[in-house]
Image (cartoon, rainbow, N blue to C red):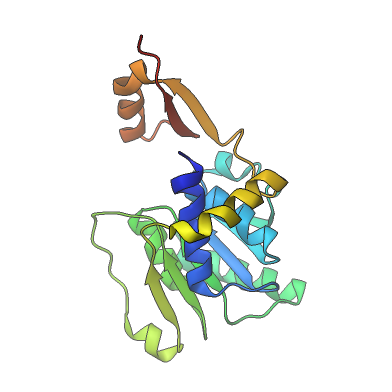
Length: 206
């Protein structure tokens, strides 16, 4: 179930972005979908950045393929400056970044737009019902693109499975198996943002 949603969706977003080896790929929000996106982008040869407001979520991101991690403090300009300084120090391009918003939070979406530069791309994967104020003209000024991704075409599932079977994408440690009889407790914890890993409900009814 995790592969069919949380792993394949960022894969489709990566394909939509036209990510290539050597590109800078930025994932904003790495609590679930973003963590799998980090691994996929790394496996495809990108220079990956993981950004989150929760430092605990960033702890194992370098092990999963991120070259650097940044804790978002709410100061978009500070995050942008740190990211640009990192790219310059590493000799990476300052343009054409592929930015993936996987937090589903208004702050994450605002940050994604703040990081957008020339020839950049924003892949919107996270979902929020809250309104977000952005200057849409930046897309024109930077000759940039933005595209949403709801899910993944079934034709891409075999390749995603190969990434998992080769060990390029780790599932264990990022999921939290729970008995389905605990569904109400799990949903409550999910709504309260108490879960650190993606819950997977296992049927336990006789």
